[in-house]
Length: 147
Picture 1 (cartoon, helix red, strand yellow):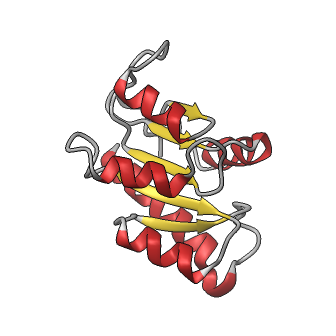
Picture 2 (cartoon, one colour):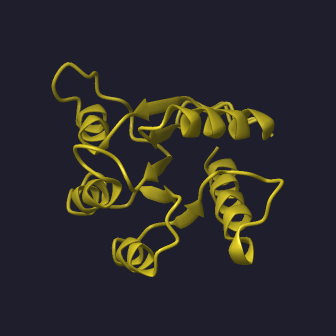
């Protein structure tokens, strides 16, 4: 199913080039053709969302894929900033992390994330309890519904 519509887009906030390539590959594999905006850290993501600095403002993304561990402003700090901004409080945010720490999960839950995806993204391997597949499947389903 193609989701190439005017109002569907994805913001990927990730500092690791291999993880960016993994996300791009998985989206292609599932025929998700929505525009993908990439920010390398939380500050850059806020600049894109708000049109600050030299960044042109992007339209509000359908879904945000957010890495937790990044320099300058980490994922949880960005999520906190988004949840306290009336314009972005309702964004669908999926945390992507290699961390399966309960403290990270609890903090993400407090900040009302839509899902928690354990990296590396893979549909060939099942994460603990199927979390990798379930989280990314939920993300794909949401994207298709909004498309």
